[in-house]
Length: 380
Image 1: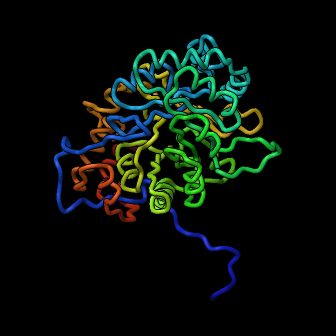
Image 2 (image 1 turned 45 degrees about the horizontal axis):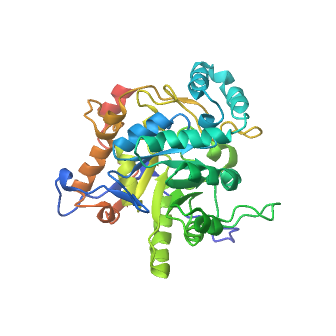
C-alpha cells in the first residue's frame, strides 16, 4: 500500500555494479591519447599519486614525475614533521596492528616544521618535475605561502569533505575564491561527491575538483560517520556539474576521481563515469620502495579523538613502472594500469579521455561473477 515517506532515496552505484559496453568501432590501444592537463602543466597519463604518507615521499614524487605523471606530497604529514621521516616510517611498518593507531596519533601530533616544507618542495623542484602539495583547509592559509615561495607548481586543498561554504567560529576562515586569486597557482580542491557541492567549488576559481568521500582502502569514514556516495554515481554527478559549469562560465574544470580504485577495471570505469583523471593510493603503496614499506594508512587515521582509518597491509608486489605500465604476469588487474586504460579505451572506440567519458555504461552486478565459477572456487 502507498504511505507517506519522510524522504526519497535514489540508487547509487559503485565500480563492481556497472560495466562498460564495447564500441561499434575499435581503436588500437597504442593510438589512444591518455594525456591530462592541470593549468599549464601537461602529464602523459591521467593517474595522480595520492597525498598520503605511505604513497608519496619526495623521492617517490620525483620518480613518478619522471615517468610522466603527477604525485602529490602531503604537507600535513610525516615528511614535514620530522627531519628523518624514513626512521618514523620504519617504526610504523614494524608496529603491531593493535598498537598502530595510538602510535599514529602520537607521531602526527608533532608540529609541522616550516623549514621542512621549503626543503621538501625544493628537493622535488631541483629534480626538474612538476611539484604538487596537499594541505588541509585549516592549514592552507599558513603553509601555502611557504610552499609557493619554495616553488610549488600545483596546490591541492583537501579534506574528507570540503565545501565552498563553511560555517565555523572563525570570521576569517579559508575562502577558496580569495585563495585562488591570491596564490597565483592552479588550485585543486576536494573532496566532494555531489552536484551542488562540486559546482559551488568550481565557481571559486579552482582548476580541478576531487571526487570521493570514504571509498579508500584504508579509510573508515563510511563505517564511522556513515557518509559517502559510491564512486561511479559520485563521479557521474560531479561530471554533470562540470558540464553545467562549462556552459555557465565557458571554463572547464577537471574532475578527479579519488579513492576506491583497486584494479584496472575500476580505473577504466572512472573515465567512463566522466572523470578527467584519477587519484590512486593503495595500488601505488604496493610499489617496491614506496614509503609505507608494504603498508598503507588513511590520513584521517591519526585523528586525536575520532580516527577514521586503519593501517592495511598491501605488500610490496612490483616496481612502480610495472604497476603503471607493466609488463605484468599477474592476471588480477593490479598492475599495468595505463595499459588497461588504453586497452579498454580501444575496445570502447575512444581515441581520448573525452571520448571515453561518452562510453555507454550499464548496471551489471554480475559483471565479475558471471561464468567465473571455476575462478571463484580456485580463489576460495
